[in-house]
Image 1 (cartoon, chains in turn cyan, green):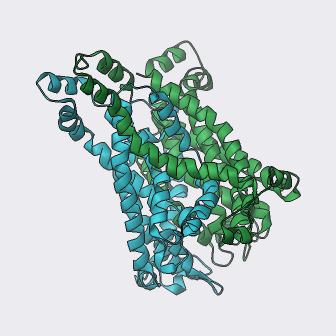
Image 2 (tube, rainbow over the protein chains, first blue to last red):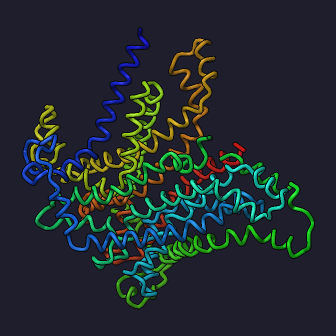
Image 3 (cartoon, rainbow over the protein chains, first blue to last red):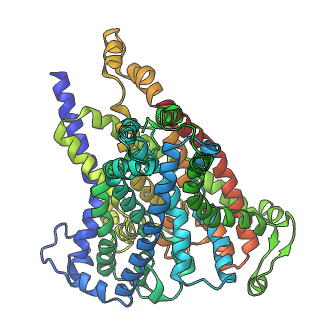
Length: 275
Length: 321
């Protein structure tokens, strides 16, 4: 009896926490769907009664929206495409070979993930300024690799290591070459991990702020996270537009994240959670 | 994740590595290095080089004139002497440490409580709460800051309305950012809200790995719930807790985006956390040398915390093979 009462109490508490945690997201989306008079109302309108897409219309017509969507896609896409290849090679080496310096390489990969970009942005800016690559997408892509690559190596290492070596050995006994066995046996098994890692890298790069903020000063060359500041002017903030813009910026990430969350959770804690 | 160790062992001693022509042995020996070389070069180029340049920059006088000439002037440790004796930098470091302690403490506390709660609820409640947490986790930081900015808006913000209507006082047209203590409270809400999902879900995943038999045995021996937690559960999830603690510390000590975006890219001096200070000195005041030395202080403090993280991570991944 006491146990059941406890369970009911805990369930109630869980629902309450759910409501508190998700309310801000609900408020962002519902504000984006409200007409102006319901947004700027002294008594909150909890549920939008006159759903409208005007704010989204406004948001996508803010100058440089489409430019910045394309920029974000180019930067993030190139970064992920380059990094996933490099990371896969390195992960295969770390997970499948014993070699001198392997431990040092692994520790370096973990350690560099701890270096804050907030600190590196100063030398990065000065260096790119010297070589004339400030305000160019190439410079941003280069340094986004710093955000994505070490994490990708680390996560992929786990995926490759999880494929039993016996499978490869069996293929080699049957006459496959080492590389052939790896490509034909391991690669298909690791493919979902590869996709998950690429998507997570995409999310990280998409969300990056400080590098893009410092390097990209021309509005037509910026990314979406920087573009969001255009809703705030000296005259105040267009909250409806901003919430619509924030929803649009967050949407692809949320969708992708839901797809890969269970894969990357283990990778993020670096194998601390077994299984 | 645990088979890396034995995989390596069986490859090294397995039947595949046999004596062959010296060229193929050499190729096999070199193969792993060839595989890591491209990644290694990129990491050295985009992380190693800037890190070295940051150190070098911290010993330079590097202002606007130097920026145009692309040439700093060596001043030794003068930048460090300047910031370490600067009263403002003292305030910045103290604020950052306090901010980190409060944020890490609150994030870990709430995350632990939610993880323990997830273990004790019905299936539907667990699914609901986990799904909610994943949604919050997925929300990118910049849109998240924008949405909290709106919630705490002084005129039409829902927080002011709620606080007024639950009788917490008169918050009509209350500006949260006039008083830095209140402003930091808002930033803490944003940071903790964003940190809870990852921490809570990871901890919950860790808790599910605690063997049931151990808990039951302790209960049969008459241990009370908190004793079970302290003597059975805690020792098992301790390494995970250390990792999460150090990760949170590293993230919270480097907080920049939340302050910068929340205060519309013009934070007053009261809001200078160390990352904000370093940014401001460099890109607003154009004292890149001073900014770099502040960044070096930040990196050094973080490196100390990272040692714990790296040690636990390396031990865990090598021992569970």
